[in-house]
Image (cartoon, rainbow, N blue to C red; front, side):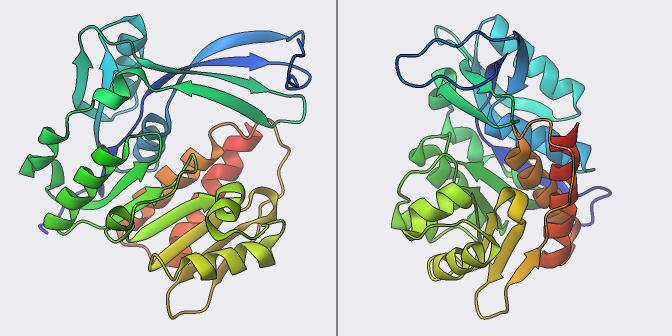
Length: 289
């Protein structure tokens, strides 16, 4: 690759218009809870990770799709305002933009429902554009996009010699063809449990899950919230980064800040352990503010 003034991160991913609801607790089945308030928010794992990488100092090129609606215009304007190159984000006529509703409880945790909308209409043909991959240091994908799009993006990245990081959230089984193209698999504790079949309740079990998953992917990152982060590169000793004590405001979007910051550090050329530390610090700032 030729030298670049700033690291380049390519994000192929989802964009959602988030509606955030603040409530004392999340409702159980059949229950109605009275909330404190609500607000719109820019979101989607792809969008959040793109913005996080840009804030971490990377030049970010985003591929995705929104609807030709007010939600879509909101999402595009927020990408541009954050310094993300959104020229490859299509506006799809006749399709509503992706959206989600997230309920944040009094303890700072949340639950969400997403509707993919136009995200599913992302055209993989644009991935063949060689300018997309010029000087790129990493491609980051997420499971909010269809497998076919992730597979096409991973193939294009491999052709261009760009490493592939898959944030496999939310959980779904991964096709062998896709995982064979993934250089870095990134999951949280719940997803690590679902992939490995073993409970992840502390940093030791997170390390165990990362070690097991490294049989499928050469590098694995397991984010375990307040227990820290476990990283594993096949054939090497695990890297453990302790959690940073903070006053928790909300965990919403923390995983995306971690992923985007990790990608920016990786594209910069930092060592694996340093990438984990940089991303861990960024996530800690996010959940406390």
